[in-house]
Amino acid sequence: MTPSDSSRKASLLLIYTGGTIGMRQDPSTQTLKPFDFSQILEEVPELRKFAYRIDSYTFDPIIDSSDVEPGLWQCLAELIKDRYSMYDGFVILHGTDTMAYSASALSFMLENLAKPVIFTGSQLPIGIPRTDGRENLVSAVEIAAAKDGQGRAVVPEVCIYFNNMLMRGNRACKVSSDNFTAFRSMNFPPLAEAGISIKYNTHLIIRPEDQDADLIIHTRLDTRVSILKIHPGITPHVVRNILCGEETRAVIMETYGCGNAPCKEWFLNLVRQAAASGKILMNVTQCLSGTVNMNLYSNGKALLEAGVVSGYDCTTESALGKLFFILGQTDDNMAAKELLDKNFRGEISK
Ligand code: ASP
Figure 1 (cartoon, rainbow, N blue to C red):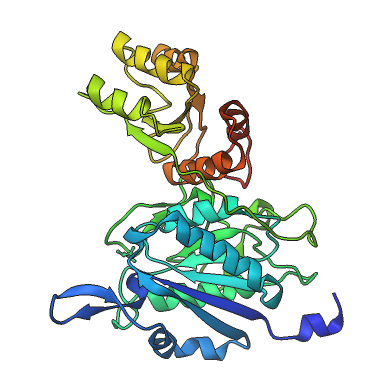
Figure 2 (figure 1 turned 60 degrees about the vertical axis):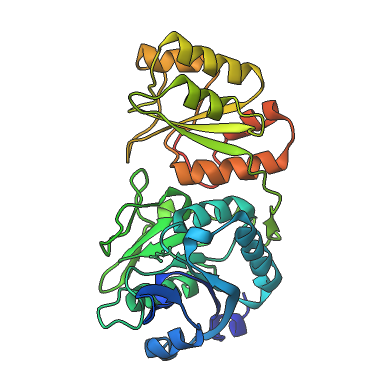
């Protein structure tokens, strides 16, 4: 780092994709709709008090995040790659509904990340007096600009910042539709907590092996993934349709507790049939916290023996992004199954 590096203003790119933070009530329908981004900056004059250069980029169209598709993630990865050398960090304003999916997917798509990519949003539009958007945005900006004593980004990860908590993006879940604490990271501690000052848990933050390595983006995603949520009363017809669908390469099985499912013969036969046809069956728990351990109960063991692989303590959102990414890397399901066991971006504890 040269002296001029350390004294120069931090520069950030604020990317607006949509979401409540930038919405306003449409008087004709009484529903919330996205509005022009320039007005967000007017609503947050605090941003001007930072000695940062903040540029903005608005997606067209801006969307309610329930409309998010992998195409948006590809555009985000390409945008970050294109502007990577121009900025010290990136803040992505995104709807809360699918923010955990987008942050998870981006975490896998960005390799050798040495700069912060911080997702944030809000539960109340920024134009409303009690909005949570202002604090979320101001702190996300501060975190994206933070440097350590060596001039490196303090948090070179894809994260979600929400209501005083900085979470690893692929560990966070939306847990409330109406509380300001909309996100939690149940299986991994926060990377930082904001109070009077922002306290970073530096020992938990992942740094790139080589700080100067080029950013690699993985935009090839294969979305042939389904989710099967196990529940009492689930029928053979439903299980067959999801597990044995021709278009599906992988199924995330959301099981009970530490990875258990029914051990009825029809159920296990369908699991065996799907596994034998080469499908990847990934076991994640329906519980908010904890990990899959298929060796604990005979029902779990039966799944393991039928060919199901453990997703450990991965969230469903993260499992989906991980599978899209891995399946995009290889057409060979056996190779993909092996890759699934790897901890790529701190998404699992094993
Ligand atoms: N429906 C909104 C969205 O996800 C909700 C929000 O932003 O909080 O875009």
